[in-house]
Image: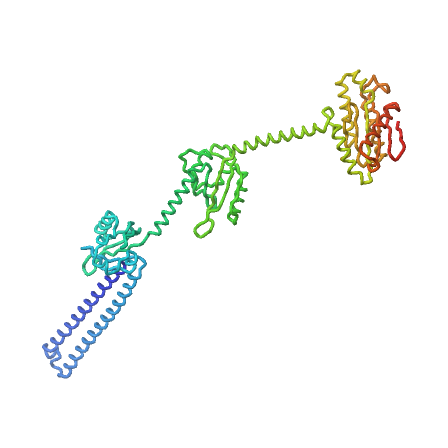
Length: 531
């Protein structure tokens, strides 16, 4: 279109230049002819007649030569302009033929096509000689007659039609989406139409694919029970699914999510952690799953689980982040309740385990646990060369105490003795157990005889210092204990039962010695009695 306008303008300028030069030459020549006539026929004193014939002839010759020179100059200028015009036409014709858009020139009066470029032939499948002299209507170029009528109406009314979309037909009856632009120009006094058609089939196909893809995504967004939100790396919300409205407590018609900051929905304590996760994705992390607390419109707090991932552009560069957000408040509540149940079960389990190895009245280990522990200690010390001491004590005349003060007082007495034992026996590996009704036993791993004797005597004295009244006792008028102490080397004995028998015998000996005393025995020494 622009090509032919330039050609037309160039022709007009050249024609005007020729007319102007011819007019100047005619005026100049006429002036000189008049001048010669006046010179010849004027008075002798005011003309050339009085001069010699030679002078007159020379003047006439100079005038003729001057006119011929000017005429020659005009011819040279016109020839140069003609050459330049021809080169310009060739250049503009080359531009017309090599344009990447299909172009055609049509006569307005009868709609005949006068010329098309190579791109038009390639786009439509017609050769140039097949379309020149025909109309687009004869070719069936327009598939929609209404579009053609609108196109012609705009050209008639405005002389121009810009970027009109329509569907056009090729020679092989295939179709393509195109955009046509045109304008009217005057060539040799006639109105013509310069048209440019651009094939938009691929763009349309791409746009349709995008629309179809967006429809699929929109269907997924609308159907998802979870909120699906897309943001840029600054956290600005670009797209959000309808589920977000219910999740965050907004009305169904709310449309204000776009442009909001996703981080604004989190409690302040979680914002920095979320920023760090987004920054990590910006630095190359592909995605992750995190739990946050979010604030609803009514200021209530919900627990959310956020799965995030990157969205890549056509160049393979990540430019957006997709977040799948799920309300896990109900799950968290269940987890919390389950946690409480599990904790309670753990407590009950520990209590059950504790009850299985402890005495309910005193809280001391029971005999079953003591027997297992004694076997373990014997096994560990058998090859160590270390000793093991046992202390067994029995409350003196406890049956009489119960008969005299009652069973509740008896239980209280046992508990007081228990408290004393816990305070006295402080070793990390030492074990205190209730062995029978009023009997207690202590394991002292790695304890030698001298230390065992001291501990045994301290225990006996501590019970007496409790000063628990016992008026039915045959020894003194307060509660006392008899104590048996043994120190053994596990490698010297066949089994732990041998050590138990020894300490039981020493306790019996303490009772035989009048009670309220300690008796010591060792497999490597003779029995020793302590008052």
